[in-house]
Length: 320
Ligand code: SIN
Image 1: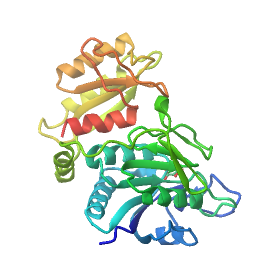
Image 2: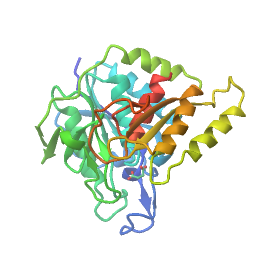
Image 3: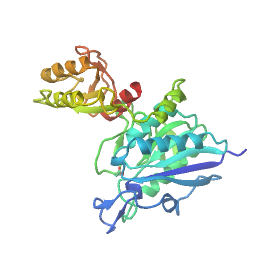
C-alpha cells in the first residue's frame, strides 16, 4: 500500500483566526476558519494526498483534558493507518508546547506528527499561517521523519523541547540550549540534530490510563518570588481539608517554578513541607526561560527539569 497520505487535524488557534480588519493582528477571534479552508491554495508536497479533519475549534489558551484526549485518540488512530505517512496539527501558539510535549511523551510516534501555528490571523494582510502550514506538510512528508515536531517561521523544533518565547514576533518559538532540530527553507529541510526518539515501552500503557481516567489528577503550578510566604499553599491546604477525603478534586501535586536554580523562598519551602506531609507531591523547576536544573533535592523537594507547564503535565502523568 502507498504511504502517500498526510492527515491534517485542525484544532483552532490564530492560524484559524478571523479579524474584522486585515491590519488587525490582535483584536481577532482564534479558531474561526475551518481546516479545509486553511488548506486551500497550499502547495502540497509532490505525490502526497491530503485528508483534513476538524478535531476542535478553540483558542488554545482554553485547551484541557477534553480536547487533549480527543486529539490523542485521533492522532493514534491515524498513525495506525498504513497509508498515512504523517500528521500535521494546526494549533494555537499559546499552549502548543504543552500539547507537543504530551503527544511526544504518550505516543513517541515512529511517524512524524508536526504541529504548526501562526502569530497572525488567517485574515491578515500578510498571514504567516499558509507558509507555516506548507512547511509543516513538507516536514511531515520527509522520508524517515519521526516523532512530534513543531514548525514555525522556518524552524523545526522537537516537540518535547519547544517553547513559546515571544508574544508577538512571527518567530515566537525556541528550543532552549540545544537549538532547533533543523530548518526548512524553500521547501528544503536541513537537519542539525537527530529526530526525537521513538516509542518508549511504557508510553502506550500510560496513554491508555490517561484516556481511561475519569478525571486527571489535580496538579497546580505556582511561582516562588520575592515575598512568597506560602499563603497560597496554606489556602490550598485549607480548601482540601474541607473536601471529602475521597474527592477526585483534591490537590494531588504542586509544581513550583523556583528562582534561578529552582530555589524556593524559605517561608514558601516551610509551607511546602506541610503540604508534603499532607500527601501532596511537590516538584520544583526554574522560572528562568532557558536552562536545565541538575541539582536535586532541596529539603526533600525533588527537581523536575522541564518548563513549568510541561512539568505540571509530567507530574500529573506520574500521579495517574
Ligand atoms: C491560541 O493559542 O489559540 C491563540 C494565540 C495564537 O495561536 O497565537
